Image 1 (cartoon, rainbow, N blue to C red):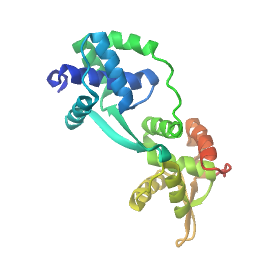
Image 2: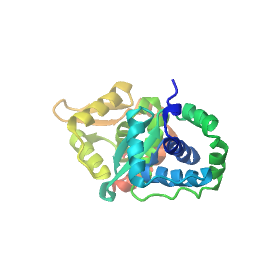
Image 3: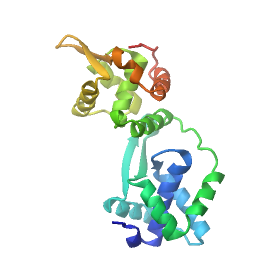
Amino acid sequence: MSVVPFISQAGRLILLATVVFPKCYGRSWARTREVYMEYTRLSAVADVKPVTYRQFTTIIKQLVEMGVIERSVWSVGRYGKVSVLRVKEPERVWMELKEDLALGEVAERICSKLPPSPPSEGMSMLDEITRIADKYNALGHGMRVLILVILLARGRRSWDELKREIEALIGDPIDRNTLSFHLERLIQSGLVVTTGSAEHPEYQVALEREHEIPEEIRRVAELGRHALGGGYGGV
């Protein structure tokens, strides 16, 4: 059942902006500030006065509660935290909004006029990890992609080494249970294997599954090699 008819005009424009900005840049998500900027741009096209940023965040909260938008917070180390948004069913919502608002074609024209998305220092690697995690179901969470990237970039790692390098990269402590859960999922998938003793296990990418690792992940591993200050360890 569509929820669009029950959303206010400002809410619909905000929802459209949440779809449009990632659509323009080939991403599945957008930072909250990016969505607000796109919303104000669409408001000008629609010839309506945009709501304040405070009102905008209230509407975002309502859309999250309605289950239309997902909101999460990414840590970017010393650069602080960034709030990101994504529409749960972007293509369906996009079609409904195009029909309902008659702004879809305008939004697409705006896309073609947007400047190239500038690289964001400290976020480029995490941006890529998020995109790849979305694309490959076997790596359906950014943390699992990050683990694989580190193992590709650094080679065999102990549990403590892996935990330290993840925390150094994201700039926040990671819960031990969270790391264990995602590491176990990779082991179950066969992409990662355990070596060493039972008391001191080590982890590495499975040699026989190396050919299954997408080139995109290898490319991000090169970013990881520089970010983590080490050489390529191989598998």
